[in-house]
Length: 87
Image (tube, rainbow, N blue to C red; front, side, top):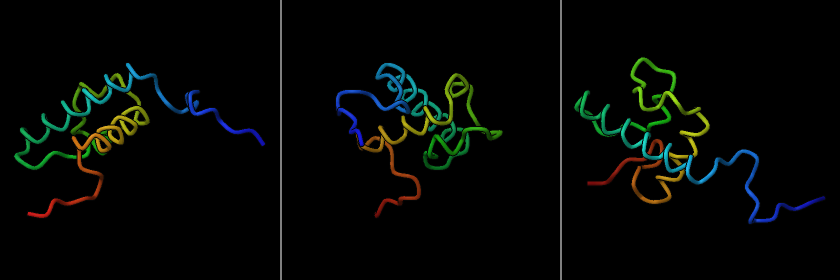
């Protein structure tokens, strides 16, 4: 049994610069759709492959946007999928 060195990236992780680009695109998509619909920010990964998918997400895979969304949730910028804010 081998253990992964914590300094080596997982084969499923994307490089940091690509993650930042995907996170920026995910935020742009959430804001664009919220402004267009008048509703709260959608979870960007849920837009992938739909008729509402903004052009800014086209150069990313669903996996990349999912990773970007998880990153943004960890930063506190985006709410986790299915979470609701208490008022």
